[in-house]
Image (cartoon, rainbow, N blue to C red; front, side, top):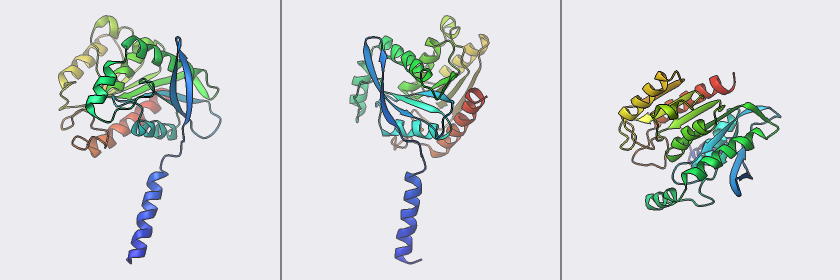
Length: 250
C-alpha cells in the first residue's frame, strides 16, 4: 500500500471513530430547590417517547469522557441528561478532584439528582415511567443514591461507586440494580460488593453484580492510563446495554 493510501485509510478510520456517536448534546438548565443546575441533554433521532437516563460524572466533573458516555447511551435509544454536580468546575488533577468533591454537600447533590429525574420526566419525548440512572466512581455512588431518593426509578447502574448495606436504606430501593466493580479496587472491595448484593437479595430486591478480578478503580475510563482495561470495559458496556434494554425498554 502506498503512503497516500495509508494516509487515506488512517483518515477514514479517524472519521469513523469520531462520528461513531451520532447524538449531539445541547446545554440545558433545571431548578433544584432555589438553585439552577446545568447539564447536557442528548436524545435519539425521532419523536419518541424514549426511556431516559440521568448520567452522573466521576469525581473529575462533567468532562468530555462523561459527555461521550451520555452520547453513546443516546445512540442506544435513551434520552440522557449529563448533570453537572460541580456547578461548572472540572478537575484535571486528583488533588483538584478531591477538593471539589469534598465541597459538594450530599443533600444538595441528592436534591440535584431528584430534580434531574423530574426534568427528564417533563420532556415530551421521554417515557415518564422509564427513567433510570447511571454513574461512575463518585457518580456510581450517586447513582445508587438516586435509587434511594426516587422510589419509582426504573433502573440503576453503578460503576465502581460506593454502596450501602443498612436494611433501612436498602428497603427504600425499588429499582433493579446492575453493579460493575474491580476486584483490585482499594476503595470498594469485593467484600463490600458481596455484602451489598446479599443485603439487596435478603430484602427481596433485584440486583446483579460483576466483579472483574484484575481490574482496579476507574477501569472503564481510558484516561486512567495505568488502570484502564479494554476487555473488561467492553464486557461492562455489553452488560450495561443488555440490562438497560431489559429494564427500560420492556
